Amino acid sequence: NYAESVIGLKFSDTEIEESLLRMGYDVEISQDKIKVKVPPWRGDILHEIDIVEDIAIGYGFDRLTPQNPRYLTYGKPLEKNKLVDKMRTILIGLGFYEVETLTLSNERDEFEKLGMEESKVIKIENPISEEYTCLRSSLLPSLLKICRVNRHRSLPQRIFEVGYVVDENRKNILHLSFVEIDERTNFSRCKSLFEAISRDSGINMTIEKFDHPAFIQGRCAGIVYNGSRIGYFGEIHPRTLVEFELEHPAIAMEINLEEIG
Image (cartoon, rainbow, N blue to C red):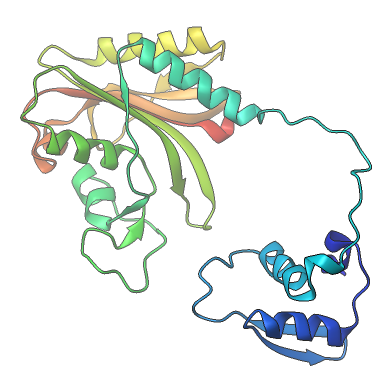
């Protein structure tokens, strides 16, 4: 089975049961299946491999025979990580500061304040605050909230984030988003930033006509890669600025990096 293939030993049902009982699990064996109940105090158990590790610990590391690796391998960055590092370098070079925000959000920030109709999100079953009732579906509200907290600071303000959003299928999707607030910023400025990112990253992205309720109509564009729209950018609508208690013009962009990497 899976545990035997990872640990490299053959286990009887009794040995697996005894190993898991030593680690605090409730175990029930029926025919060829082993049902395991994780104790509530084991918050570190997230995946199947964590249970396999506990089987090995309960069995006893001292009883395992050490073996040299059969294959020589070298670690290397994932292609997606190379893309993320490249995007970070480009945006820092353009004068942006990186921020990290919470994945938790709420429906009002995610939809109402952006002028969007509410769609399906992953909701928190037992939220401890009205501020954190769901998982975010976009990075833009998180960045605008950062700008709201820092609205007393001097202009211009330029921030970006590379982070995960969660779709309605509970899948983590890596996004890139930036926001710039300045008295003179406008759509042309946002378009020039997009072109700089496309050029310096070597990714052939184009734009198309696109409207988004959070942006001024006619001052927003969709971002297209390989025939699919992967994001948008533009000048944020005054209504959206008021909702987030911002006082100066702002531009923003958001891209789905999963579609590129």
